Length: 452
Image (cartoon, rainbow, N blue to C red):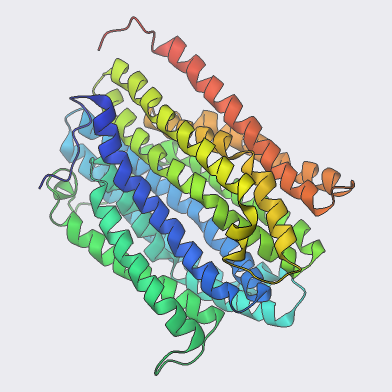
């Protein structure tokens, strides 16, 4: 059965959907990873959730380096495939994987060496929460190289038009995580009760299995991975091209993570329960942005291949086709978070004094879901054209504005809800500005009268 979708020919919407659905499903399964952790960890109490939330910020920060390799490698490989240069695509893929392995190992070493001051940044209140956060960070960040390689492999498989392999690999990993989470957290059978440490170990185990399955598929790929030559010397010029494409997105991701860490520290002023609310709320909110991220990856590959082939009109039509689907999803998730915040939050935390804070978080952030979906999808289209700077400028500028907004609004009668409003309002502005910018870019550089 053919797994790779032909993105250069045929009807646009069916091709785009065929590629996007397994990628989106993969993103939703990745979300389910995190939600599974939260469901089981939530049974340990809000303190355990706060520990995972604080430590997880550094896994999120680490993603910036993975994005550098994934984005640059995926775009250059897809553009090379679209231009009919598969050997060139293989060199970009090999370079991206080598960069990811090196950066992942380096980040892991630094995480193990500096876990004390890094967790200390959040000024958590409970000594037990602090110790749990350190353990979780040492395991998940210490083995972050596995996550890096998974992300880059996913990007490269997507670049070749294969969204099925990452879906199957991630689904298997989810099953492993679902089974091992309660076993290692609560000590079922011969296993001891490891609590938060058990959740970290289950996550890493699942990621290792995912990597093994993706390597299995890559060895049977006849589009991109068959052109990778592992013994070929490292090409610094290819590294430079990958960095040029991926650096704006990497900086955007890392700055976004850093700002979120500062916000989390401000939130900690309302207690460890408030940190837990932010962690659980963001995981529930990921229902919308993980799905949008899947379509973003699909439109990235579609745009990159057709841009490389000079098919301008397919680039335009592909973007608007993706946009129609993402708008519907954004409206649906907005309604879900605004109308049903309490039953959603109670799945994870059942403490009566924490639930009202969680309801406020979901309802306030619910109003921005459509705009966040528009932003993420448009980022993918920009990246497919090799233009990663515009979305990075918009994201960095308005995400940075969250800090002063949070401080100012939290000082009003809104209190903690003022912080949540700073997140929601900034997402609305980013979505509106970025989609207008991309439409203007299409109008200027891809006039409707232009022929393929």
